[in-house]
Image (cartoon, rainbow, N blue to C red):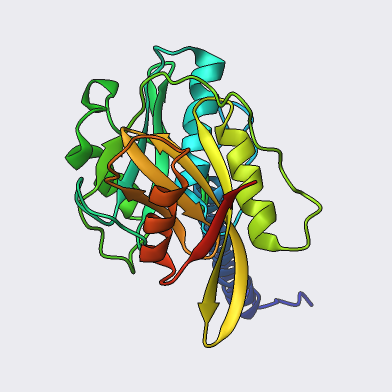
Length: 268
């Protein structure tokens, strides 16, 4: 007697198994594509956040309220490194050309090997997507810089640059071991800036709520202006009567606009 076996159930089982296998393969393919897509996105994000290698080394002074003096020091170092004809500017905003300002910011903009860059004490080096031929157009350059400060309303961005000056005949020395932070910062700024222009480091006193305080300031010339750096306030340009850093009476008059009642101003 010949036994006959029905293959219908077996065939159906094979079909169902094949479908399940196909679904698994399809799911694995989709998962693999998702992983590849996520990995590519992650790499793009990492690349976007990856810091740009600096075009050359530069160490910040790391002083209080020092964006302007940091930028001027960068300006000096850039010209010293690449020559007096190298293009570099200090971009400042916060006031009109003939106004004093203590609230604002400053950074350096420069061209190097056909690329426009910024150096910001807060962000370091950053390339700008601006053709070098438009480097003098502040209205074109400033928006690409100011986007990093969304919570600040920029006022009157402008370029500042300097003409060659004689270094200080008797440059101040940095007081790095002084217990008073204002003396340390002001003296470090004075020493650095004095390598390229006249600078005076002064000590002065003032009264706050009946308490006498003693501080220091660096006085220097830049962009045809008379500037005073006070570590507790920042750097302020003054339209001084005399373009000299030696006139202590003039320095005292300017300091009194920053610290009312400032007195006992003397050179250090």
